[in-house]
Length: 522
Image (tube, rainbow, N blue to C red; front, side, top):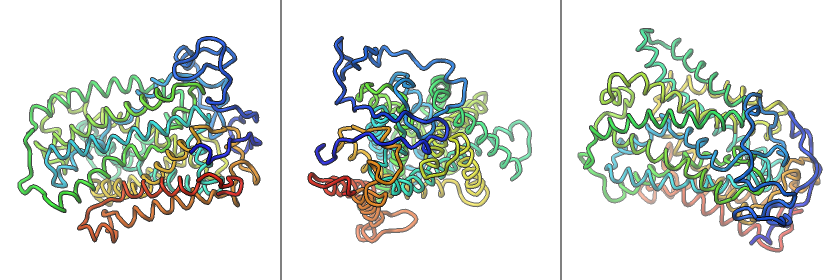
């Protein structure tokens, strides 16, 4: 099917895309087209003909890279600046997924009425979508650009601005706010334990302080994230090991609700639970943002494997802990409930771990949101765009904490976001398959009319139609803050996730069939 997309051709590099550092204008062939090396080939792919060592032998990122603010924004990363090993991606994703929101999600499944066994099955199946996140990550080393730029191949230069504004920036800010609200609840409890009287003013200060720590990592950038996240992963793993021991001693492994669900009600709840858990991995359609610095010839299987494992393993463990805890305590008030079964000496450390985990996940979210804001067309430095994201997220967080109910807000946002995220992720993965992961980074950064990815008036019609079709199909099937007609006809069974993804992927594959002229946007 790769013949459906003509081979990319180098385009003029538009330095407006690189407010911090211009990328070179010369195009580079895809790994599949690179000339083979005369020496021993790298595992799974040929080594570059210049004699550069295999990715597994490449030196790790220099220490000095983490000591300065990242210069690159949405511009192309030249080969000379590529560094690191794919296994570093494990810690990046693991640290980001040992967090309060995952713990709450696991507990919510039992509050919805599922048995423990049903909840654990939903947790495993929902987190299998981390494989999709891993697949999307392979486009980073191939193009040397972030996901926010790669998707110009799908939607066109102008169409992608709309995509980044909605799917990239707005949803990222919502997730930032949800995680920040959860962390602020834990941090506020910690402050109260220190003798500070609770109040809206204290909550506001706590939110701002946590956001500032988070944004500091995001502003510092990619190298700082890679360097910091391994020790953060180790600290969080130790803390949650203590939680696991405490929870396992109180959990009821045969838990069933007083009135178990059955029939249509059960299937409706399973669908809602699956959407809730899958929303986590699906929210990272930006995984190429964190793999784009890897050498071009990095093993695709290694990128997929380390990314997926880094997200899947901790997510399953932490969500499962939330479900297990819900068999013993009231997870509608998770903080008080968990404190009742944790050792007294560990409570403060646990609250600190919750805050640290949220800082880790939100630093990734803010980093990608900053890139999305640049890709929308805002001509500011990446570091400044991250600060704009933080200001918006803090405002939403204060609303979630001071005005609305956090658990209800979290559940509704996560389930509803799948209507957009599912089709978007499926479309991205389909494009990778159609192009055989062959992306010309410099051409993608060219936003001028007549450039390789300008298509028709700046919009790739097949991509826009496929996304609209997928979102419309998902909206007809959703059952969350509103009930779509298909869901209503099925008694509340929510099929928005599989239907939206299948319609989007199928439409795109059909519209980008052989014989269509990509230069005309078809």
